[in-house]
Length: 344
Image (cartoon, rainbow, N blue to C red; front, top):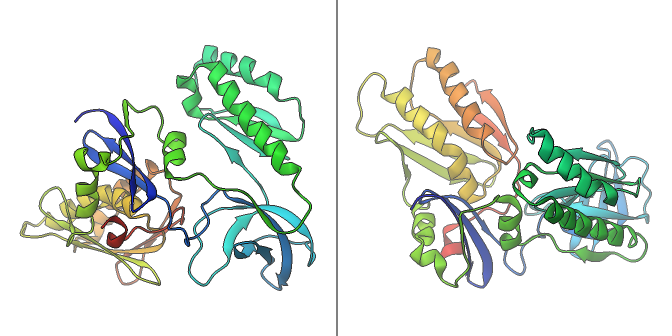
């Protein structure tokens, strides 16, 4: 199956979406359970509870429990403010939030208190840039609101981009009017289906029929990632084991006993790792135990890792080699981790 397919379905009553490219699932989203954490993008009106001395942060009261805001100097207990969820809430910790709200849609991002109209630099066609500016600029009358036109807008009708921008501006103004009052949930973050529409570009086809994960092979592929190891090109195996403290990754060469087996398998693992982490929704500290190889080959492997994660949309910091010879990464927790029981 060639081309790009977006499949929208449900699993156990939870909205789920899969991005399939040339027959292989490249990304997968599923909503948390009803009692799960707030979705990133959710907006609360919150009240400052207490300041954390020495850390520059504050705990906030929200209808869904405590939230934690970093870099909150000058805030006073009892103060009311708008905050937005930035990532997944870890067990036993406060909801991670920011007071720098973003209103993000498919074609535009509205940035309160950061005025100006900016068009993605990846849109290099001057005629397209001029058409987009002409369509959106009349909407930018409020000097408190900034607008960023996303790169995907180059593939859309400028009028459609303007409509999308206007919706985000309306939402931003509506939220700004909600700054006073008791703690309240004001806006739910986007669910899996909305995120698929927003972030997965212009697919060749979209499947929305209930049960489409079955006949498109999505469910079979997702269940396979929880099998005993992910098969790599060349015969090696990639094992991904999330723990409470970190995500452990092990690379085995398999039956290949050639002198270059370690490097070849490690290169295959480096290319497969972003997808393996993305499909499982894993983030935080990641430690990779690569197969044995010569130290002189580390530079080449680092280059492959850098190229592989450059294509990934989740912010990932390649920390480097540890004294024990493992490779460490730090990856942003953008979504709740996926487990085998979520699919069964």
